[in-house]
Amino acid sequence: MHKVIFFDLDDTLYPRSAQLMRMIGERITDYIIHTIGIPADQADAARRRWRSRYGTALRGLIEDGYAFDLDDFFRYVHDIPLGHVIPDPALRAMLLRLPLRRVVLTNSNIEHADRILAHLQIADCFERVIDIRALGLINKPDPRAYALALEMVGVSADEAILVEDTPANVTPARALGMTTILVDCPPGPAGVIRDADFFAPDILGVEAIVSDLLKQRTSIGTDTTQTV
Image 1 (cartoon, rainbow, N blue to C red):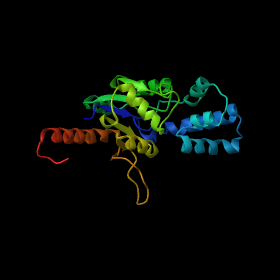
Image 2 (cartoon, rainbow, N blue to C red):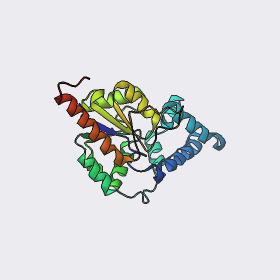
Image 3 (cartoon, one colour):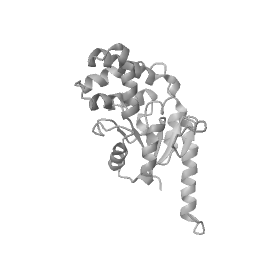
Image 4 (spheres, rainbow, N blue to C red):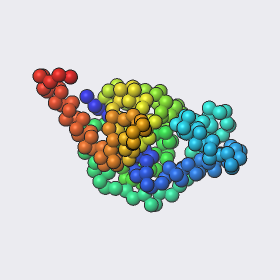
């Protein structure tokens, strides 16, 4: 039986169209140029390569042995305006209706997560935030990140739902046995593999999927004649 929903933060709990991740990406590239010292004509390609290979540019910087101050990195790359991101009362209401524990699981740091959740007026909708520091700098899509998060909240993989916007992040979670929902990321054309169990057009679409999942579980649990 499902007990916990893990929600990704950026581009999941607010629309991708808000362009916050684009701004963060630009700040990361600037940091790579001005602090790490990679030439400007190579910095953005390096950021994209690290994100593709490791899930985050931060992990790439660490893996490639660059010396930098982690707190300084987080302060710089998340110094973006939020004024054009409008809190949505419908999101808050939807989250509070979900009859499961709710946890944020993010590759960002806790300060960024707290700022976003406070701005969206949904901070109290979650029992906790599991950030990159809590994970010991092990980030999604590394399977260890999901295993650690499951251990932290005391559930097994088959008791957890993951809501994400990034296809690469759902594949290892699904392999572990978590139920996965991709938001604002349709299945795609033939030949494009987006390995998720369900697809929601936006974050509000998660509610119907979760409701159906819980109904199915209840039906299986009460109908002794059903073959499973």
